[in-house]
Image (cartoon, rainbow, N blue to C red; front, top):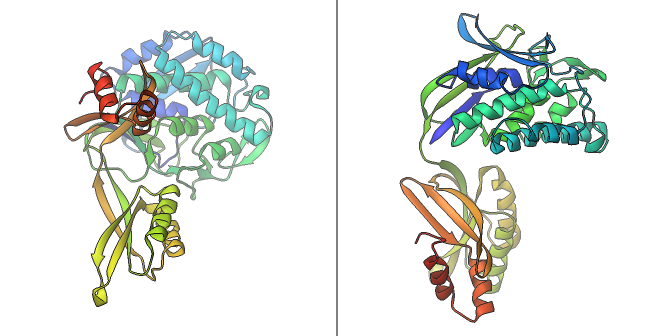
Length: 396
């Protein structure tokens, strides 16, 4: 599986992410030419190869009307006070693919929503003096174009180093991470440290939030290329985003297996317990008949859940069963990649589930849709599945 892993040990900014992943391309200069052909008003991209701490990397210069950000980590110019609607119109007319337009608009809207939340104003009232409209569009569009060119199956990243201290912006001196950055990083593992400064900008945070599938340790991967995206400021640690391009095995993950044995619950009580636990978000709940001490017939209740929710599901097991102990086991899984699509058929819209990996590809119709159509048509599910499959909508 083609994978990009981003090392955000020194945070992330739009220009640093651009610089890191442009190095992963076969011809970075060709991409630089394409970026400048966008003709964003007053914007010029320049790529500079520099050495920091003995390491060669790329620094991306983004000039707006001949002016460049002064720090390399702050995106707080006031080149434009455009509203979100104006930005969407502008993005819609960029000479790029629809995918790049959609991604660019989505990332920019993440910024708008974060600013809206921290300033307590509707999104339509937000003026992007905090971000610097043209700077942000340039950085975001560049990353979206490069990601389209690289076409990874998955983008992963480390926890994000946000820095410490304070940062000066349009509203004065604010703590690091800046409020909009903190809002964008909700749900993402972050940490601070002794390095004084803003290591993760709002633009960098929005790009990570949009593109990164999961944050954590670097997976086992066969690395093909490494890109170093250098920041302008120098710290005691090499100031860069590292991007690794390589291949990882088909999807694997770790889940928690909780189980208990009971011999004094009725069938109704067990059914209620399993339904309740499943409705709470367990990956799976199932029962196994077994023989217990004193020759009593019993039931093993098993719950598969996410590892970070094991305490929650253990509590539910204690609440809804008669057990006095719950076994916990972390177990690895081989997992097929899954997705869904909505198809129009002669019977109306039908959801199709797709899964693939490990040399296997399969599709199946959503049961609830098949059941609904079967009831409406007075036919069996087998007949409906056969009819839909015969029209080429699914590979049996």
